[in-house]
Image 1 (cartoon, rainbow, N blue to C red):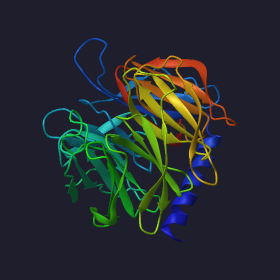
Image 2: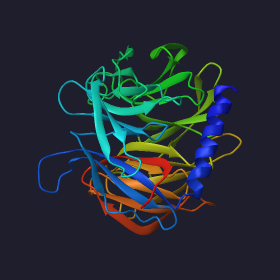
Image 3: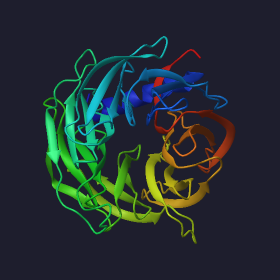
Image 4: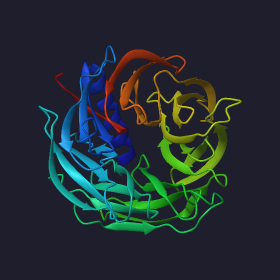
Length: 380
């Protein structure tokens, strides 16, 4: 069985398992600080897949600024960046399937300064890290017991762009793996490029691809990146000029060809805004992006034949500085992390239009930055 077929079959199996579950564990990465009501690390809650209600969050593991987190495909481990200190690091945790608690395993250097995003290859062999501060990316091998080895892959970006305040140097802001595990894509805000690398999951290396990158408009500031579920298209949200760029994806070469760029903001908005997260709905019908300033989630419909997004609506109810959001694997609910309101709010997704409908459910989490779902069923 080819790896692409295997991955598709695996995702289908996980989706079926998820659909039969009544609830699901959700983990939240946060920014930590001192104070009685401040965050202490990584938190866990349980999402009711019928009502959208979240249980009261509990501390799963104490950690310093575990802003972005990722769960291993086998559901047994969790990994987190740490934005504390001048030298970046990534940490590994074992996940207790019965209690949801996390047990610290080990920590390794991230390969650069200011790590801000992590992902895991689909085989679960490597952790990939984007270092915002130093404009670099690295690969850290995952051992069979979930611990992290010494970094085996590294790339350093160079260059700048037109925004003299934010783009004097490279700023790698996310790293994502292609559906077939052959390429890694690094959206670099500082140089207005999505860098494309050949990924060797056995050696744990990333090297320059041909083509080596895809460009966005000068000053756009690409931040986060997402594939369409069918693997034919990809999308990047541009933080600085508040747009989304859609690409056609050529799986054989890894090439990205821009096909449409669309604003994330409503007509007439003239306030300050910065985009953050982008997500494609599991059905492939809809696309979502977050606005910090306008304080909204923008919803698009995706053309099934061309992969291009068309505006549907902006949802603003109970949203404040949505640094991150995520869609549960069943496609029923969208959880929005309000960094500016110390809360996570739940929306039901209209399966016909993609519109977000307030459920009235939310929980208090101090400075939430990242939302990740544990696909295995859990007992609430």
